Amino acid sequence: MAEGEATGAAFPVRRGGQPQEAADPASDARWQRLEELLAGRARQPGQLIPLLQEIQGLFGYLPRPALERLADESRLSLNRIYGVATFYAQFRLQPRGLHVVRVCVGTACHVRGSARIMQRVQEELGVGAGETTADGIFSLEPVACLGCCGLAPVMMVDETPYGKLTPERAQQVLRRYRREAMARQGRDPVAGAQAADAGAACDAHFPA
Ligand code: FES
Image (cartoon, rainbow, N blue to C red; front, side, top):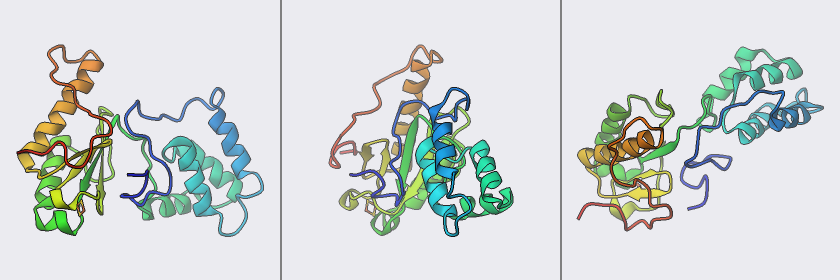
């Protein structure tokens, strides 16, 4: 599946790896690029949303210092900019977690219990839709369809789909990812199995 297809996201999204922090402006070329983006465009009509999209494309989310620079250059209030950024689902105000969990809430998944999956996932992670866990391991996103409707209900962790889910199975999957992430960070020496099989097909990773 191509980036953004299922989510409607306007930009490629990072999967896996460490959260993309907005690094020190003095040592991060992205901030120079930001200045180039703002120059000459920030005050033009109709540029607010395109610039927000490009800033998110640069950093992976919308860092507050970047929005402050946008406010300075555009002469729009920071409140106005935050109002637009929080209105549209495509914009993120936090960096993404190590793993992106997408729970399908499309029609096929809905009729097969995706609401219960989402509820269990939210309980397990302790975050709501669009949020990142405090430990930076998971970001949670609802999506309209993952293209595996025959395996509904479905969720995807990074690039790996899990179909015919139950709330219990979803919880097990997430705990496996968490164990592995913590083991990598040296926080859990008894961590278990490998979590991800990148590039797995839709017919993988569902209970028999
Ligand atoms: S509706 Fe859930 S995968 Fe299509």
